[in-house]
Image 1 (cartoon, rainbow, N blue to C red):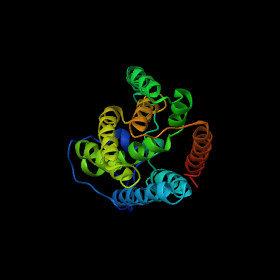
Image 2 (image 1 turned 45 degrees about the vertical axis):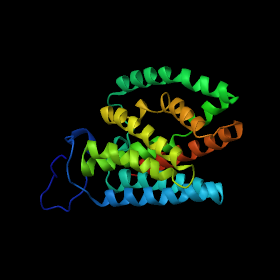
Image 3 (image 1 turned 90 degrees about the vertical axis):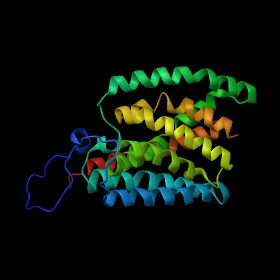
Image 4 (image 1 turned 180 degrees about the vertical axis):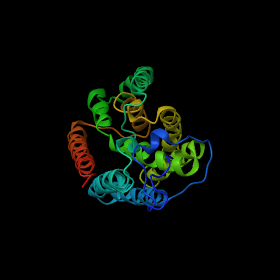
Length: 248
Protein backbone atom coordinates (compact mmCIF):
# COMPACT_ATOMS: atom_id res chain seq x y z
CA UNK A 1 0.00 0.00 0.00
CA UNK A 2 1.13 3.61 -0.49
CA UNK A 3 2.41 5.33 2.61
CA UNK A 4 -0.03 7.38 4.68
CA UNK A 5 0.20 11.11 4.20
CA UNK A 6 0.62 11.73 7.89
CA UNK A 7 2.04 9.34 10.45
CA UNK A 8 0.13 11.11 13.21
CA UNK A 9 -3.22 10.82 11.46
CA UNK A 10 -5.59 7.95 12.08
CA UNK A 11 -5.05 5.16 9.52
CA UNK A 12 -7.25 5.67 6.46
CA UNK A 13 -7.16 3.61 3.29
CA UNK A 14 -5.49 5.38 0.38
CA UNK A 15 -7.33 6.15 -2.81
CA UNK A 16 -6.49 3.80 -5.70
CA UNK A 17 -4.85 1.31 -3.34
CA UNK A 18 -5.16 -1.62 -5.69
CA UNK A 19 -3.04 0.05 -8.38
CA UNK A 20 -0.01 0.62 -6.18
CA UNK A 21 -0.32 -2.32 -3.81
CA UNK A 22 2.33 -4.99 -4.45
CA UNK A 23 0.90 -8.38 -5.31
CA UNK A 24 2.18 -11.35 -3.37
CA UNK A 25 1.49 -15.04 -3.76
CA UNK A 26 1.03 -15.44 -0.01
CA UNK A 27 0.80 -12.79 2.69
CA UNK A 28 -0.98 -12.09 5.97
CA UNK A 29 -2.75 -8.76 6.23
CA UNK A 30 -6.40 -9.36 7.20
CA UNK A 31 -8.43 -6.32 8.17
CA UNK A 32 -11.96 -5.29 8.92
CA UNK A 33 -12.93 -5.69 5.28
CA UNK A 34 -11.76 -9.33 5.45
CA UNK A 35 -14.29 -10.03 8.21
CA UNK A 36 -16.99 -8.12 6.34
CA UNK A 37 -16.29 -10.19 3.22
CA UNK A 38 -16.53 -13.43 5.20
CA UNK A 39 -19.79 -12.29 6.77
CA UNK A 40 -21.27 -11.46 3.37
CA UNK A 41 -20.23 -14.85 1.99
CA UNK A 42 -21.91 -16.71 4.85
CA UNK A 43 -24.94 -14.45 4.68
CA UNK A 44 -25.21 -14.88 0.94
CA UNK A 45 -25.01 -18.66 1.36
CA UNK A 46 -28.02 -18.44 3.67
CA UNK A 47 -29.87 -16.15 1.23
CA UNK A 48 -29.10 -18.45 -1.68
CA UNK A 49 -30.41 -21.46 0.24
CA UNK A 50 -33.53 -19.62 1.42
CA UNK A 51 -34.12 -18.27 -2.07
CA UNK A 52 -34.13 -21.76 -3.55
CA UNK A 53 -36.10 -23.48 -0.79
CA UNK A 54 -38.39 -20.84 0.77
CA UNK A 55 -38.90 -17.85 -1.53
CA UNK A 56 -36.82 -16.28 -4.28
CA UNK A 57 -37.14 -12.88 -2.55
CA UNK A 58 -34.42 -13.99 -0.12
CA UNK A 59 -32.01 -14.38 -3.03
CA UNK A 60 -32.92 -10.98 -4.46
CA UNK A 61 -32.42 -9.40 -1.04
CA UNK A 62 -29.03 -11.06 -0.72
CA UNK A 63 -27.99 -9.84 -4.16
CA UNK A 64 -28.90 -6.23 -3.46
CA UNK A 65 -27.83 -5.95 0.19
CA UNK A 66 -24.95 -8.41 0.71
CA UNK A 67 -23.84 -8.52 -2.91
CA UNK A 68 -24.11 -4.84 -3.76
CA UNK A 69 -24.71 -2.36 -0.93
CA UNK A 70 -22.22 -3.81 1.56
CA UNK A 71 -19.35 -4.28 -0.93
CA UNK A 72 -19.92 -0.89 -2.59
CA UNK A 73 -20.17 0.98 0.72
CA UNK A 74 -17.14 -0.80 2.20
CA UNK A 75 -14.93 -0.19 -0.83
CA UNK A 76 -16.14 3.23 -1.98
CA UNK A 77 -17.08 4.95 1.26
CA UNK A 78 -15.27 3.15 4.07
CA UNK A 79 -11.96 2.32 2.38
CA UNK A 80 -12.24 4.99 -0.35
CA UNK A 81 -10.50 2.81 -2.90
CA UNK A 82 -12.51 3.88 -5.90
CA UNK A 83 -14.22 1.62 -8.40
CA UNK A 84 -10.96 -0.26 -9.02
CA UNK A 85 -11.47 -1.77 -5.57
CA UNK A 86 -14.44 -3.61 -7.07
CA UNK A 87 -12.61 -4.64 -10.23
CA UNK A 88 -14.20 -1.84 -12.27
CA UNK A 89 -11.19 -0.23 -13.88
CA UNK A 90 -9.58 0.75 -17.18
CA UNK A 91 -6.40 -1.03 -16.17
CA UNK A 92 -5.59 -3.82 -18.68
CA UNK A 93 -8.92 -3.04 -20.38
CA UNK A 94 -7.92 -4.00 -23.92
CA UNK A 95 -6.13 -7.14 -22.74
CA UNK A 96 -9.15 -8.09 -20.65
CA UNK A 97 -11.48 -7.62 -23.60
CA UNK A 98 -9.24 -9.71 -25.86
CA UNK A 99 -8.98 -12.56 -23.35
CA UNK A 100 -12.73 -12.44 -22.72
CA UNK A 101 -13.52 -12.60 -26.45
CA UNK A 102 -11.19 -15.55 -26.99
CA UNK A 103 -12.46 -17.51 -24.00
CA UNK A 104 -16.11 -16.70 -24.70
CA UNK A 105 -15.85 -17.68 -28.36
CA UNK A 106 -13.96 -20.83 -27.45
CA UNK A 107 -16.70 -21.87 -25.02
CA UNK A 108 -19.67 -20.95 -27.22
CA UNK A 109 -19.69 -24.24 -29.14
CA UNK A 110 -20.15 -26.24 -25.94
CA UNK A 111 -23.00 -23.97 -24.85
CA UNK A 112 -24.85 -24.36 -28.15
CA UNK A 113 -24.25 -28.12 -28.16
CA UNK A 114 -25.59 -28.56 -24.61
CA UNK A 115 -28.60 -26.35 -25.30
CA UNK A 116 -29.45 -28.33 -28.45
CA UNK A 117 -28.99 -31.63 -26.65
CA UNK A 118 -31.36 -30.57 -23.83
CA UNK A 119 -33.84 -28.79 -26.09
CA UNK A 120 -33.25 -25.46 -24.36
CA UNK A 121 -33.69 -22.21 -26.32
CA UNK A 122 -30.19 -20.80 -26.27
CA UNK A 123 -31.00 -17.09 -26.68
CA UNK A 124 -33.01 -16.51 -23.48
CA UNK A 125 -30.71 -18.83 -21.55
CA UNK A 126 -27.64 -16.88 -22.68
CA UNK A 127 -29.29 -13.50 -22.06
CA UNK A 128 -30.43 -14.65 -18.63
CA UNK A 129 -26.83 -15.45 -17.73
CA UNK A 130 -25.71 -12.15 -19.25
CA UNK A 131 -27.88 -10.28 -16.74
CA UNK A 132 -26.02 -11.92 -13.85
CA UNK A 133 -23.44 -9.20 -13.22
CA UNK A 134 -24.02 -9.59 -9.49
CA UNK A 135 -22.26 -12.95 -9.34
CA UNK A 136 -18.86 -12.01 -10.85
CA UNK A 137 -19.01 -8.68 -9.01
CA UNK A 138 -19.64 -10.34 -5.66
CA UNK A 139 -17.32 -13.32 -6.10
CA UNK A 140 -14.40 -11.65 -7.87
CA UNK A 141 -14.78 -7.88 -7.62
CA UNK A 142 -15.55 -8.16 -3.92
CA UNK A 143 -14.49 -11.48 -2.34
CA UNK A 144 -11.43 -12.23 -4.47
CA UNK A 145 -9.97 -8.75 -4.04
CA UNK A 146 -10.55 -8.93 -0.26
CA UNK A 147 -8.93 -12.36 -0.03
CA UNK A 148 -6.00 -11.25 -2.18
CA UNK A 149 -5.40 -8.19 -0.02
CA UNK A 150 -5.55 -10.25 3.15
CA UNK A 151 -3.83 -13.49 2.16
CA UNK A 152 -2.22 -13.12 -1.29
CA UNK A 153 -3.36 -14.13 -4.76
CA UNK A 154 -2.74 -17.87 -4.38
CA UNK A 155 -4.92 -18.38 -1.28
CA UNK A 156 -7.45 -15.98 -2.82
CA UNK A 157 -7.90 -18.24 -5.84
CA UNK A 158 -8.44 -21.28 -3.61
CA UNK A 159 -10.79 -19.41 -1.26
CA UNK A 160 -12.89 -18.16 -4.17
CA UNK A 161 -13.34 -21.70 -5.45
CA UNK A 162 -14.26 -23.00 -2.01
CA UNK A 163 -16.55 -20.05 -1.32
CA UNK A 164 -18.36 -20.39 -4.64
CA UNK A 165 -18.99 -24.07 -3.98
CA UNK A 166 -20.20 -23.25 -0.46
CA UNK A 167 -22.50 -20.57 -1.84
CA UNK A 168 -24.44 -23.25 -3.73
CA UNK A 169 -24.46 -26.00 -1.08
CA UNK A 170 -28.04 -26.81 -0.17
CA UNK A 171 -29.40 -25.03 -3.25
CA UNK A 172 -28.18 -27.53 -5.85
CA UNK A 173 -26.95 -31.13 -5.56
CA UNK A 174 -23.51 -31.38 -3.94
CA UNK A 175 -21.75 -32.60 -7.14
CA UNK A 176 -23.14 -29.55 -8.97
CA UNK A 177 -21.96 -27.24 -6.18
CA UNK A 178 -18.47 -28.74 -6.37
CA UNK A 179 -18.55 -28.33 -10.15
CA UNK A 180 -19.42 -24.66 -9.71
CA UNK A 181 -16.46 -24.37 -7.35
CA UNK A 182 -14.17 -25.82 -10.01
CA UNK A 183 -15.53 -23.29 -12.52
CA UNK A 184 -14.82 -20.50 -10.03
CA UNK A 185 -11.21 -21.65 -9.64
CA UNK A 186 -10.70 -21.28 -13.39
CA UNK A 187 -12.41 -17.89 -13.40
CA UNK A 188 -10.28 -16.76 -10.47
CA UNK A 189 -7.05 -17.62 -12.30
CA UNK A 190 -8.19 -15.55 -15.28
CA UNK A 191 -9.33 -12.65 -13.09
CA UNK A 192 -6.12 -12.71 -11.03
CA UNK A 193 -4.08 -11.88 -14.12
CA UNK A 194 -5.71 -8.48 -14.65
CA UNK A 195 -8.08 -7.80 -11.71
CA UNK A 196 -10.53 -6.28 -14.17
CA UNK A 197 -14.13 -7.56 -14.30
CA UNK A 198 -14.23 -7.00 -18.06
CA UNK A 199 -12.15 -10.15 -18.46
CA UNK A 200 -15.21 -12.05 -17.20
CA UNK A 201 -18.29 -9.95 -17.86
CA UNK A 202 -20.09 -9.34 -20.22
CA UNK A 203 -18.44 -11.60 -22.82
CA UNK A 204 -16.95 -14.71 -21.19
CA UNK A 205 -18.86 -15.24 -17.96
CA UNK A 206 -22.36 -15.48 -19.50
CA UNK A 207 -21.21 -18.23 -21.87
CA UNK A 208 -19.37 -20.19 -19.19
CA UNK A 209 -22.19 -19.67 -16.69
CA UNK A 210 -24.66 -20.80 -19.32
CA UNK A 211 -22.73 -24.04 -19.67
CA UNK A 212 -22.50 -24.55 -15.92
CA UNK A 213 -26.18 -23.95 -15.32
CA UNK A 214 -27.19 -26.34 -18.10
CA UNK A 215 -24.91 -29.00 -16.67
CA UNK A 216 -26.60 -28.48 -13.29
CA UNK A 217 -30.04 -28.76 -14.85
CA UNK A 218 -30.89 -25.07 -14.47
CA UNK A 219 -32.37 -23.26 -17.47
CA UNK A 220 -33.29 -19.60 -17.93
CA UNK A 221 -36.24 -18.34 -19.93
CA UNK A 222 -37.51 -14.89 -20.85
CA UNK A 223 -38.92 -14.37 -17.36
CA UNK A 224 -35.45 -14.79 -15.90
CA UNK A 225 -34.13 -12.30 -18.45
CA UNK A 226 -36.64 -9.65 -17.34
CA UNK A 227 -36.00 -10.20 -13.63
CA UNK A 228 -32.26 -10.23 -14.23
CA UNK A 229 -32.43 -6.98 -16.18
CA UNK A 230 -34.33 -5.28 -13.33
CA UNK A 231 -31.78 -6.51 -10.79
CA UNK A 232 -28.93 -5.36 -13.01
CA UNK A 233 -30.36 -1.85 -13.34
CA UNK A 234 -31.00 -1.57 -9.61
CA UNK A 235 -27.54 -2.88 -8.81
CA UNK A 236 -25.85 -0.41 -11.15
CA UNK A 237 -27.94 2.41 -9.69
CA UNK A 238 -26.87 1.47 -6.14
CA UNK A 239 -23.19 1.39 -7.07
CA UNK A 240 -23.48 4.70 -8.92
CA UNK A 241 -25.24 6.43 -6.01
CA UNK A 242 -22.68 5.21 -3.47
CA UNK A 243 -19.81 6.13 -5.78
CA UNK A 244 -21.13 9.65 -6.36
CA UNK A 245 -21.71 10.15 -2.63
CA UNK A 246 -18.20 9.02 -1.70
CA UNK A 247 -16.96 12.60 -1.17
CA UNK A 248 -19.83 13.67 1.07
